[in-house]
Length: 395
Image (tube, rainbow, N blue to C red; front, side):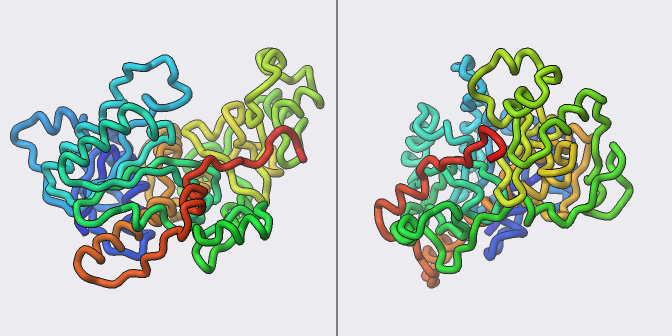
């Protein structure tokens, strides 16, 4: 299947579709506004990614969009984010329009749009479904938890999948390949129709980064992967004292306040609720929490190493996102962090890619395994809100 990747960033969706799915997808064109992300994409997939504003590119009468079977992408999602409540007119909400324009121009019969879960139920979501229906697409929408598909991270993302050939709701959501080990036997039995027969427990922080040695230096290293991106920071004496004041897995800013009030910022002392992940340590035997673009700043989230007195490194963040070590990132430390944090976890993308490929095969009279959750309860459960591990302390 010929694939176009829009708002592609470094290429998390393309990695999932092209490298980490059992299907055959060939990238033919891509676009992003960030020149460093474009450089990363082209370093891994060849000179396919065009740098620039997609709206401007499409307004150029000489622009040629190649034909494709599928268009994938994640239009910038800040307009839907809970962190952006005051921007009701945020223009980034409307970037699904040029996305769909490319679907039209490329004559694609499938599309996959990824975004934050807040997209679902929004006015823009309704508009996307209406646009798709008017052009003969049938659609499926839902939120998927990355940990359920082999990603060692409890990141949740929304997907809208369209097909002109078959009904996507017969194929989606994908069967879960991994399960929350906290499920009781009764719960797992009830929802077993939502899982692959060989489902495994969620992958953990230990499984993702346990083999890495302590980081060296504070700059990108002239070393083979994975050590090239496995560098640290230069913490101030006060920061280092704060790290040492919360030595146990799972501790956070509230433990810092209890153990070393004199080291606790006053704004945290004043904030008596919420923010339980700020300045938090990861657990070795649980998935990481959502990796965002400033994962190297522990005051921004649960980004402290489980036992070493430091935040996670770029390589560790990339592994939590399931980027293969062989993936090449281009740019400064800040730009690479942005590429890592903004990406769709490739293994999650691969799970969706496999189901789209099954749709494509069936439309051509080929056989496929066809399993989807067998009961409405199981289908609802797959897209339900997932409880995260309790993070309010070391226990």
